[in-house]
Length: 375
Image (cartoon, rainbow, N blue to C red; front, side, top):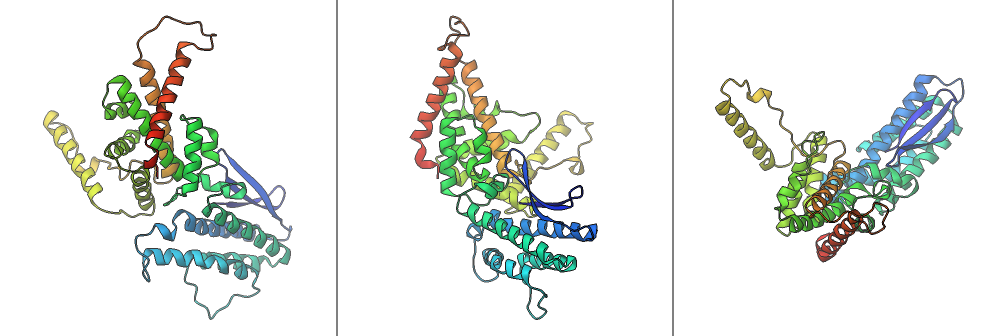
């Protein structure tokens, strides 16, 4: 989403958004010195809120809801998306209509921006702000089509409940070029789509590494432990187990991301996963009391993770985990290769380079062999 701020040094209203490797900013409008700071800051805050609720229609599309009957989740989401057409007329209206109900969050946010503009009372500012909001709405529509260029690039920092097949295919091509991941994967592709493609390539890497080392695929995954992210292996294990049974990559990844997004909204979807986590925690407490009778470990001292992903950024978090897993597979593949006669480091076809090419070739062949399971 776009965040708006006031540059006090130059007395301007700025719009700022993420590009995947840092933020970019533009000047929306010049402010006049007689405008109160609290009023201009209020405008910036309301514009940020409007951007947030509008981009939510992208991250939580109506198409991903289970039901679409009147007053269902899908119906409400569609109402929010349909309200986009009311935003610009609301901003340029000179007065707020009092006889029309405001039923959506998008409409309420638009009316809050319009009120802030009327308080400032500058037609030129209203024109500039309206033009910027129009550009923001166009960026959201562009992202919905799978084009994340220009201002729509901010979608690369968002986790979505759905993924464009076009974006998944683009991520798949980028990973074919470099299975270890590249900067373009983080700056040009929706992270949910990138995570789906990365899970496909991760499973290919696990498969060929298990064959090469004689290890079980879960043993390969267990080697991907990250001390700063103790739950990373859990997400990789869930993906490996499901894909080992023949599940399609999209069907494996999307529930993980959607569950984390629900938790970010303060909801738990389904109780089986929670019951599983509670049972595991109870077993851990019982084992601790048995092996260490003096251990003061009770229900109130156990912190129970509700998801293996970061709820604030589940898709980028999962993408990070998967690329880390692919790197782990390469290190295992290299480590379990028998020692050979040393070759000078400056020789083009040195042993490490040969091993790397062999690993990448085998991973690409396995990914191609299972390509029908990507979507």
